[in-house]
Image 1 (cartoon, rainbow, N blue to C red):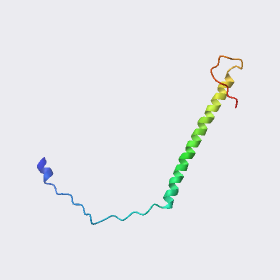
Image 2: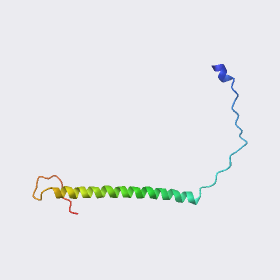
Image 3: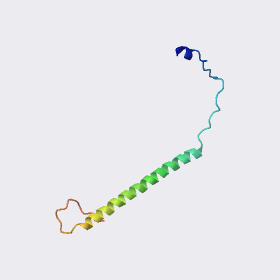
Image 4: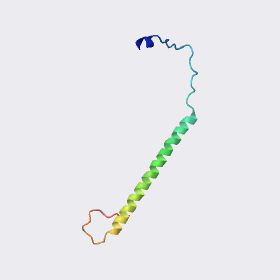
Length: 80
């Protein structure tokens, strides 16, 4: 097995050929990065608004379902 590996040809890398230099970052790339960040922020804001709205609606529903004179409840009434 070792003799088979020793008989392989060596790998030769030509260092004289250099790849073409890459271009500098353009303003379009910078603007697209800010656009993607803005989209993420918008999605996060919409998600937070949905959760906050659902929480408020749940608390209103919970406060409306308990009788007014019930003193044994364990939550503070939300007067929104």
